[in-house]
Every structure is written in C-alpha cells, then in structure tokens.
Length: 339
Image (cartoon, rainbow, N blue to C red; front, side, top):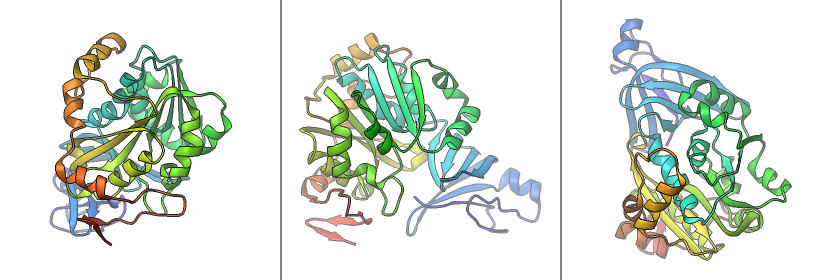
C-alpha cells in the first residue's frame, strides 16, 4: 500500500498526502469528483469515491485521516494506508481475535499489542471468559481520536475489564511479570525501516512474547496481504519466523473488500491448535455474546485451507525476520527470489 491521494476525476488541482484536490467548481468537485487513492505497488493503485473528509491531522507518530467513503462507509487511514472501513472491518477483527481465544481452553488474561482503534478490544470483550484485557498502543492521540469518532467501539473503551496503556508494546511486555493466555499483535506490517519491524522478529517472539504466555498460551498476529501474489510481501516470512519459535503454527486468510486483497493472520502456540468446526461453533455459543457476522467453524476451516501456490511458497521460502534482516518486497518464483 502507499500514500493517501485525493483527486477529482478530471485531474484538476493538487495531488498530495491527505490533501483535497479542487477542480474549477469547488462544491461540485467535492460532491461528485472526490476520490481516495492508495498505491498498492508500482503500477497498481486502488481508489474509490468519497462523500467527504471528516478529519485530517497528525500526531507525534503518524498522520491520521477519517474519510466518509461511498462504497465502504467511514474509513480510518493512518500514514496514507487504509486501516479499517466501517462496512467490512468485522472480517479482519473477527479473524484476528476469535480463532486464538476459542482455541484456548479458558482465556482470561489477554494482551493486545497495538489495536488503538478499539475494534480488537471490542471483539475480545465479547468473550465471557475474559477477566482482564491490556491494550497497549504507543500513540495516545490516535486512541483518543478513535474513542471520539468510532462510535461502534465506545462501549469497549468503557468496559471495566479493559486497561489502556500508552507505551511501546515491547517495553511494556518486558516490564510486566504476569503471563497472558492470549497475546494479540494488531500492528502495522513489518516493512523495512518501519516502526513495527522489531515486533515481528524471531528474537522478539523468543525473548519477549513466548516467555509471557501461559502454559496453553496462544499468540496471534495480523500478517499482511495474503493474496496469490501479495503473500510473498510479509505473510510467508511471518509464518516461517513463528515456525522457528513455536511448535504449532496455523496460517489463515480471508478476503477483505476494502483492502482490495486477501488478508492473512498467523496463530502460534506450543500446545495443539486443532479444533473441529462443531467444537468451534459450540464454544462460540457458550462463550461469546452477540453473533459473528463472518466467522464460524466452517468458515475458519476454509480460511485455514490456503491455495496450492501460497502453501508451496511458504514451504519453500527460507526467509524469516531477524533483528538484523529487513525484508524487502520480492516476488517468489520456484526456488528463486527476484528482488
């Protein structure tokens, strides 16, 4: 993904990062010709029409925009990258949260790395087994912004089980002696030079995450694009990194319309992660309030059945994230990597 660009359809005006482009008729341009545009890769861009720009600003750490889009409702954009959209964010957050919590026999104590918008916390707090949830995000301004603007998550922020911590996730985990039944990584992708890269490395998983999991503890992380071509960006590497640290690792994926791609997650533990569709559905009924819109046992079976090309890619790939190795974007061809 790339930067945020908003333009009118006939190309008039200024193209900039989060800047509205005005044509000859300002009102008409805003009403009929205002578009969000994001560069997914060289020679490929994704765009859709806007009703309006609800907010644009910057924090100490990142730029933030809230857009009212025509196809996807309200959309949160951080550093020029779409984070979530009102109409389909439930797909991402149900997939991130419920598989690890339902696979744990009795998840009570949970830790979120990131998750500032509150949607991950919202889904975790639907589990009646959860007694305490720590949400650790480094950017207080983004958290406050999401509290104010994302109405769907306001109840989660008011839940007494939630403890909000503003800190670097690595530093916070290192400072705590308590262990967690589930640790959730809801962070930006591990791009070279990016702020979250060190939170995807083998050393971080080995020395920070794993020691803070309980005996049956489960770790899960978002793992970037997982499409037929895009999975080679970070998905395969995250899977292989976790395979070096945990005994059981389960990758899975689902299509998210607003991302214009299939998205991936990886779940890992030293305890078996097997759970058939019937038991998955039974635990949803017994443990969770409300009804999932996307995920059930059969859906997860499908999500964790990856295509032949993706399976072959991550089996053959030898790349993993280390503290000294930054992964460039690459295409995987057989046993060769083309940079």
